[in-house]
Image (tube, rainbow, N blue to C red):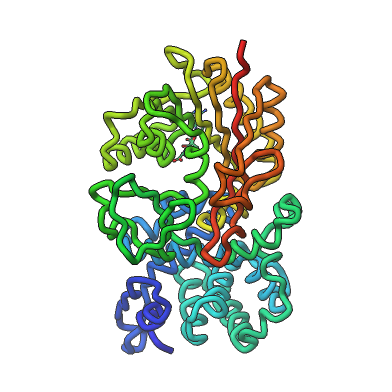
Amino acid sequence: MPSAHASNRNQGLGRRGRRIMSQGPRNRPRVADADPTRDIAFDIVLGVIAHRRMLETSLEHSPAARDADARDRAAAHRLAATVLRHMGTAGMVLEPFLKKEPPAPVRVVLLIGVAQLLLLDTPAHAAVGTAVSLARRQGLTPFAGLVNAVLRRVAQAGAGALEGLDQARLDVPPWLWSSWGDLARPVAEALGREAPLDLTLRPGATCPPDWVILPTGSVRLPAGTRVADLPGYADGAFWVQDAAAALPARLLAVRPGEQVADLCAAPGGKTAQLALAGADVTAVEREPARMARLRDNLARLGLAERVTTVQGDATEWRPGAPLDAVLLDAPCSATGTARRHPDVLWIKRPRDLTALTAGQDRLLAAARDMLRPGGRLVYAVCSLQPEEGPERARAAIAMGLEPDPFTPEELADLPEALTPEGWLRTHPGLWAAQGGMDGFFAARFRRRLG
Ligand SMILES: C[S@@+](CC[C@H](N)C(=O)[O-])C[C@H]1O[C@@H](n2cnc3c(N)ncnc32)[C@H](O)[C@@H]1O
């Protein structure tokens, strides 16, 4: 069996596992392979499925990640995201080989093994061997035989293990699949693919000739591109923002000098758009750590002097004078971002929507009260859930806000996203051939005159 060193290199999983040589009981060298990538991936997937922790939070909590270098962490992030993206399929592959449900940590080892065997180009002996070693390192030695036996059988079945499986459907929890209606299949198919990297360029910034400019003006680079390595990053020539996420601020159509609030503002992509359009922007963000990130981002973009930042709760904050426009990019289930955050699918539960929609209504009412008569509000969520999108738009109208539909001219570069009501609705299946886009809902309103 090749070492973890060789197998990791084969998969592009980042830094190779270090081989620690020691003397075994009969004076023969015993090899215990340290394999930070798989240890961290194990911690992440277990954190998501057993503790309902988000992928990023699980990474921060991972004991194995504490001393790991950036490449190991990045490789583990990618491996864990692959497992989470295909978790339903991997679970179905395992089913015929398991007599009873194994403990959660053992299941995680098996899922990592299946992902390596069937979804990543890991040679079978390496995928099985590294999974068995992982089980041992994680204190699961009594299950090492089971891991070995099950994964060997999966390896024997090879690609045949996937035959006849409706992978798109299996990889989405049933409650979400049914909530997406007719969009379920195109969305689920798009979720199986890694998202590209989208950037918003500062007006006037040079775009290298090999960067793809999308019809809506965003720039698209291949999945896995390292942002900090791109030319212009340190000079603030661009910021990371999905093509769909760039639309709500554009649709607020602010004019130079307008008094505008960006509620729920961090990390600040939409704040930057509003400031660069010439508005006098106040960015409100409740979480101190996220506010710090927003301020860092504004500083990198050279916009720190042009934006007033307020760390506080947008349901309590009030502007000194009524505003011309408000952008409310409300906290939500974030199911529209599942291409980049596949953990979202497995963490959220239907009952979470109750608290989220109540919060969205409080923010909508607060935003309405900040506006001058005739002032504009764009409500946006990166969610595919009807409760957080169309149902909240109807709730806004019931609160006395007047609909101000988006027009076909405003969305001439993305007509498929304009609904009959004049709302914006994007989803990962749009522009599928070019790499898709996040799911967003947005609607525009005005405060009634008089
Ligand atoms: C969807 S994110 C915003 C993304 C941001 N608009 C952008 O484009 O970069 C929602 C943000 O709202 C913040 N938030 C949640 N509830 C809030 C509240 N009541 N007041 C202010 N900020 C809030 C969260 O901390 C989070 O940073």
